[in-house]
Amino acid sequence: MRIIVDYFRKLYRSSFTGWSRFWFTPSDPTTLCLIRVLAGSLLLYTHLVWSLDLQSFFGPKGWVSPEALAAMPGSRVGVWSHLFWIHSPTVLWISHIAALAVLLLFILGFMTRVMAVLAYLITVSYANRLIPQALFGLDDINAMLSMYLMLGPCGAKYSIDAWLRRRRAGEGGPLSPTVSANFAIRLIQVHMCVIYFFSALGKLAGGTWLGGQALWLAAANLEYQSVDLTWLAGWPRLINALTISAVLWELFYPVLIWPRLTRPLMLAMAVLVHGGIAIFLGMQTFGLAMLIGNLAFVRPDFLRNMIERKQITATGAGQGSGDNSLTTKARKHEVEKTRQD
Amino acid sequence: MKKMTTARKPDSSRRPPAASNAEDSPLPTGAQAWSGRKRFVVSVLVLLHLSAVIIAATPPSDLAQDVSMAFRPYINAADLSHGYRFFAPDPGPSHLVRYRLEYENKPAEEGTLPNLNVHWPRLLYHRYFMLSEHLFDQYRIWHEEAELQKEIQEGHSELELSPAEQTVEANATTRDESMYRAMAQSYADELLRRTGAKRVSLKLIVHAIPTPNDVLHGRRLDDKSSYRAIGDLGTFTATPLALSSEAKP
Image (cartoon, rainbow over all chains, first blue to last red; front, side):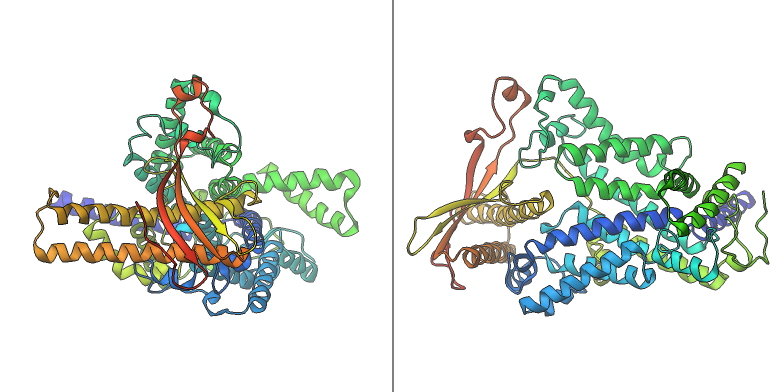
């Protein structure tokens, strides 16, 4: 009996400690800030493309009229969109241009915390105006990333806010690690694991993934295809191997992405799979969105060294202005210190 | 290497401590740490949020549906209602909407949704592609229900349904039909608005995927025989009511 009690006491203590360490340890916001720039750019592009057919998708009538939307199955309790309230084309355009401006400021990192919240609300609002089935994976990832970016200090670096702060305080160094930076990154990481797990589960319900034919069915679909992959027809075993690898990778991603030893392999596979989807299946935006999500698993010190070393090299070649040179000095100093550590 | 101390204030001029990655760090204390109460509240919120994320993605079962009812307002409001079924359960053939526009004073025109030659950039093309796939999904659901209903009425069904269950099935068929018709009407209205045509006919087309063996024997992906009409959605006018929207599965 005592053994059982001890076991549960130990389980409780280690779970509590592990939980606290996982969610509430301060971390460097570099990764989060880089995700802001990349995910923000994708959000802006997504909404810019809506501009090409704004009235047809979001106008009072459009492809999916409010009447057709009301006839859709499933509970729509809680579904909201400011676009339901807009009936005039002029007002729609004004609202859309304002949304694009917010997304641009979000990328640039001006009043980032406010812009991050607005960017999330814009993303959800546009998605809710359409029927869910008219959206695809890109919109899922856009919503997920924008939701978590607003929870952390995503404007702490690579932003106008950071530049203004440095100018005001005359400081050139990076910020201290924060709990909220770690918290936001952890949420992205866990959500990515949920995405891959359910994606794998969905694939296992079909017969063609473990059967090894699914890759062919995707590659030989003319409506998706952006590069001709019909040469694969002569390599059936290769089709089988790639298909099974992809589904097994998704299935084990939630486990193997955490150990440091297997993480680089999982991320390399992510580049291959999502890069492949982007290049060969015509879904560049979706492929990029998934890769940006995977970036949450890249250590901030690795990214910081990579980005800031590159900046020093670029500005050291005489491309920087006076202001940039000052910043470069501070960055050089920081990189040197990082190397020493 | 500097040790993270409890009394240190956040100082933006200092570089982050070497343990700047959460997985390396000791449990935080001091100025950077969140209070116990804040951690507790946030932990509860995280658990609720992640439960909503998982429930929204869980395949439908009676239990999942019951639980999801409680989370539904949050799932909908936060746009978490995603199944994450990318190319699952199986990648299938594409479904297209073929339309024929009839005008007062000029010859009829035909077109397809989506159309790579018209819908550019690729992201816009995908939006149209999803629209056509969605209309097919609605049509398929109704068509399967309608076939089942027909079997029940003709007494060929293997299901032994009570009169009450038969009424439920009949109601489901009617509901599914109104859904797909509302969607088809909405697409038709938009096509008529865009083109100024007098009326439009819609057809669902399936584009079958050839086998590797077919391709090795010279069959092209755009072979005409691989496109097949699977549903005539009817002819619609610009008025809210269709001239004739008798679907012919």
